Image (tube, rainbow, N blue to C red; front, side, top):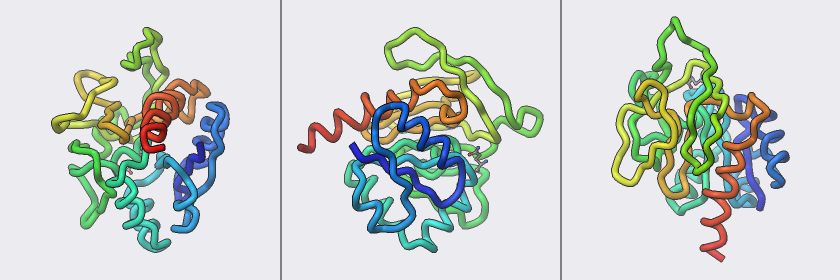
Length: 198
Ligand code: GLN
């Protein structure tokens, strides 16, 4: 399985390391011809407005949107979650997202005081182990549409959600060395979807 990491801004290298640890071949994606070569895509953490703007500059914005709509498996962490949301609160003026995931997110939701924090949270993948979650100026989910499953929450606020082939976390599993979240994306989201297509 070829998995791309959108490599315009953000913690690309960390996602690439996590994907290698999960046994897939990651590829850095900047241009449309590169995106054509991958089966699935990861949107890194970083700054969502910058990533959206650079996607337009690199001429890849619409293609990402179309591939999401076509069912390409995609995982977004933090800024990546914002980029997948259909609706953004506290957005910068004119901020665009790829969309596809029927949620409303609030940017920088945890507030200034708790700008960044770590927590062990329950992740509903069938295993009972807690996941170490790193939050850095993270969004939370304020509304989930029909068909969106909440997989983890902090104080009642959803922080991991999934709808079919779209998966998003407001935290950064790529920064912890615990590869369960990436493995969940590869084995539970991407692989079943790609096998169905074949
Ligand atoms: N606050 C950032 C944004 O709005 C996201 C932060 C992150 O990815 N760690 O894009």
